[in-house]
Length: 16
Image 1: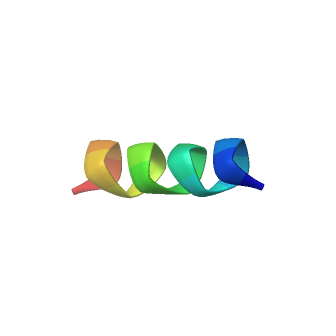
Image 2 (image 1 turned 90 degrees about the horizontal axis):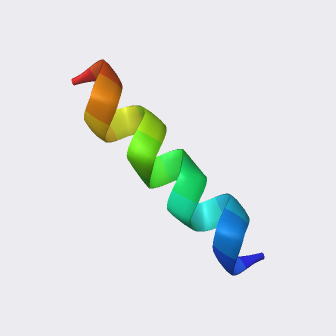
């Protein structure tokens, strides 16, 4: 669960 959340944040940050 934690890993999924962290990955999601990373993707959003990179996209931005």
